[in-house]
Image 1 (cartoon, rainbow, N blue to C red):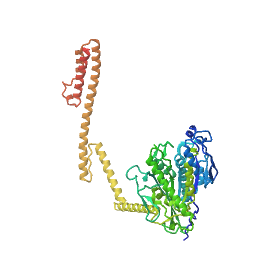
Image 2 (cartoon, helix red, strand yellow):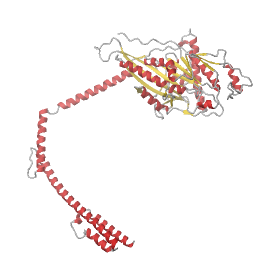
Image 3 (tube, rainbow, N blue to C red):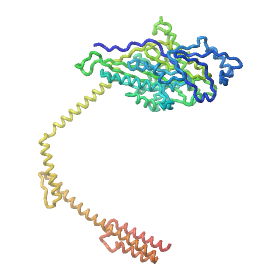
Image 4 (cartoon, rainbow, N blue to C red):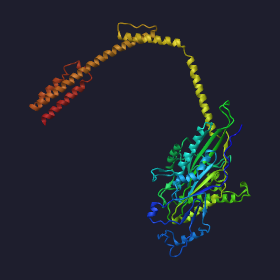
Length: 572
């Protein structure tokens, strides 16, 4: 049997791209100066500028700089002669997020559909546009469309590719699982679960089979469409840690990792239709991780959230050390990776969770975001140095094949088969219970006999002189008891009807007497005559028969209250 050839390994390095955001409206209105950056399609350069005592306080546009003279002098060591930074892609202020995705990261998403690992990381200082590039924005763009992020375009392509393959009719099956977590203050929190003990501070463990690290207890949700993922993602974003900083009104205070685990089961090419349903197949599994790193920022006296900022800078420092070690190892081509120096993945939970995508077997893309502000030049140059180191890390992505025991698709297929067997056994049990009943002729005779008895019962109830005699003494006893109960109910019905007639007549008489008494009081003011009219309308004391009615006490009470009203009217 010929196994379908997987796509060849993708040699190369970590793909590094840069995106420069425009100055915000608030920055322009406050007079923030623009740094002299020069961008091309694959390079970014900061022009050399000489600083003197006169112009150290003012920039080239005549606007006062927020940096001190000492800080501006300290930038000289960052402005190297070879200040041009070469990258795979450089996007200016006019570039859209869709253009960034199409040119830099689309191939990574398509590789995940083929069973290869992939990672998209966003790195940069606070308020440089990382979350906007990854997750988009709820605000509406100039053309009236929502500001989609890389996540939106990646999901559309991923599920579109999987659906297209499944519709080709080659027996391909796919299963996508989603997980979403944040790394806050070196604690891994599950964002798909509600905040509680089960979702907070998850333990990061190492896979016993050597497939990297994982967060123990992290919830994985099976998803079938991009819309379902986005719905879960929007709900989970409400649990992410954010805060107001001097750089941004809503600033992310944690790293987030959105993981999509894609399993594809493809049958072997030479399996014919005459084979059994459980034909041999090969299962590939790829993990696509989209990482939104919290922004590194400079700590100053009086800065709020000092602990959070220190934790963020610490984890990013360890990430930078890992990138530096990997770049140094890959430069020495004569040394095998397993024989090289130690890579400090264990120093941080962030580097542990990203170890698979940094250590070679992954298509990894890095997006560094910059702000054009002159006050952010120092951090922008630091970001570019990080990108240069990351570009030197080599990676060779190849499909990951798993066994039947490890495949969730196979497990789901087994569960469905068990459920089918249970349904089949229940159907057989119902058929056996049906066969144990009497045959159709006996059932028809029994129905006919019941119909005749019912007809005779109806006739006997409508014609009292006709008696009902059946073949069963028990049925006769029941019918006789029903006849007796029917006579009793008829008598009770007649009594109730007579009582209601008496009540109606009494109320009608009281209504007429009240009208006459009102006229007498208006004309003569004689209350005794009015009371006599009321007593004559309901003479209940002289009749013994009416007194047996249950409504008599209520009528008497009503008459007494009417008499009191007459007395009150006379006194007034």
